[in-house]
View 1 (cartoon, rainbow, N blue to C red):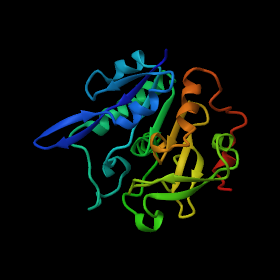
View 2: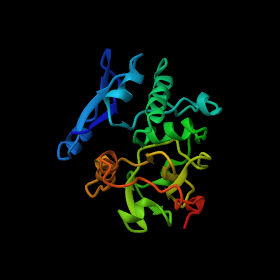
View 3: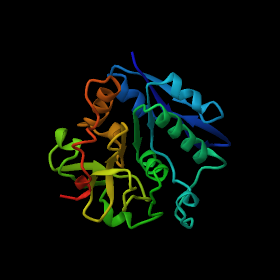
Length: 233
């Protein structure tokens, strides 16, 4: 059975701090053929790329604005210390071994910054969604078109966003307000999803990611995945 490493997030709880793995991931993957391996931040992170077959970067609080040359926003909430740096090192370790990576919400934003892209620190979330749901459009050649129709109702729990894709990445889904909701790398097996598929009843993304891990499908064809996917149609 393949092993999926999931980075644990840090949370202040009463008078202490704890690292945790969301129960939604445990519940979601319990029905799928994969072994979960919680990853705690620390100096051992590069070793995790040897022990795990793939990496999942879950949601969390904001990416520090200093990493994409912006000023901190009053609505932002950042992790203390070196957690962002350690996460970049973890991404790099899996990239060096060309192992699959799925970034969800904050995880997607970390991938955007890792590939030298930027974020908008804060935007009008009230017009972006109603009751934490909105419609996304799928790019014309996206792998998501194999899984869903042209439009998709998704959840939304973020106030940072991607509006200009990093040069190495290709857009897979977007909103009419300019928010990029999904992307992939055309050569490496790297996916970014802004919404939370683990909370969706009709999710097909996590099984698709497992198919990549098990080599059941080729993630992307560098020859046919042309940059024209960045044209939002």
